[in-house]
Image 1: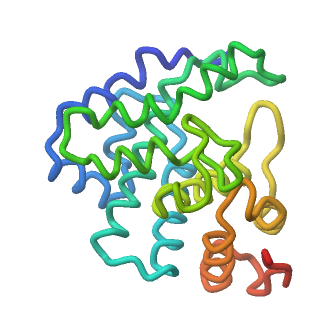
Image 2: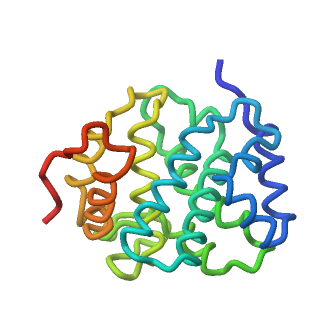
Length: 221
């Protein structure tokens, strides 16, 4: 039976709303383990750590500053908390979503961004709000295109998608690293920023993510 998250994730959401900026950044230093465990007994730690680590890996490959990289890591953590506010009936649904359920899913960036409404982090809120936008304009909630989408949001999009693909979902089995990379390449330039995908592929060759040290040679054009 699917767990009802309505009460279990509320501790993390309250913590985000009530904490100072310094407290939030200190939490992020441990990949969010302390934050995400607040009131969340069925917490899946590894995907949450993975999305933070992938976001950091891409940021460093793109040579973002240390301060900016840290903020991207934090944004990736908050995206996960926002996702946990979605109804369990949607998150755990094994089949296709209805039109109304899809409308609810599209609210996820706004739910996540709202968690920082009481904290002075306007730029991070904007990245979170935009992390489901797509270079071809088919994303949400605003239908932004290309460089209208902040670079940090484009990084979050790739980190979030990779983590989702290599994690188990009720409606599909997990993909392995190479399959996930192939999907990122296939969608580069439309769903994902091509330069961010390239940065991820380069960085993954040197990381623990890649099992054999020799990723398939295809890269986005």
